[in-house]
Length: 205
Image 1: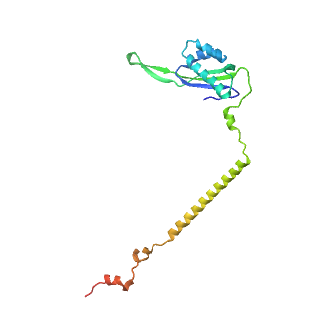
Image 2: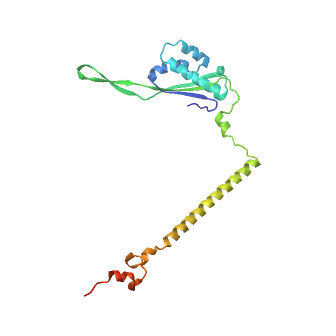
């Protein structure tokens, strides 16, 4: 949840179980200060919101040091915004069978840090990864060979499919010799004058 635009370091804190009205009392005191001054100020404020804001400020300073190699003594709080989050609705029983609503509010804090004295812009890790890689002649040859092998594989697959279709057609054309006889029976040697007629001849007289 951290990113920078024009060397602005951002950090977020979401779903803090505290009303934004209480958090803004502390955020208003720190806005526009140097980070070192802000830490000193938060140390002596007797409010519960000081701890989460202090942690968020530490996170923003760590982002600046680790990701963009900035000096922590050269940072100031450019913006700190406290927005309202989701409100949990609960009920509390009261006299005469009544119930009064309880609203448990939450808040989102958005912190933006900037440099006091502008330094040279340094590329972030994301921009370094996005730079194109120059391919040499060997890499290009290897790429061509991979493309040729892929084409060969596709052609072989097509040929195998055609051969399978031809084999299926040949199997369909083959006629079962058992179905050539009369009424679906196979012919028996001897015909009408042979062994079959002798067996099934009707006795007369």
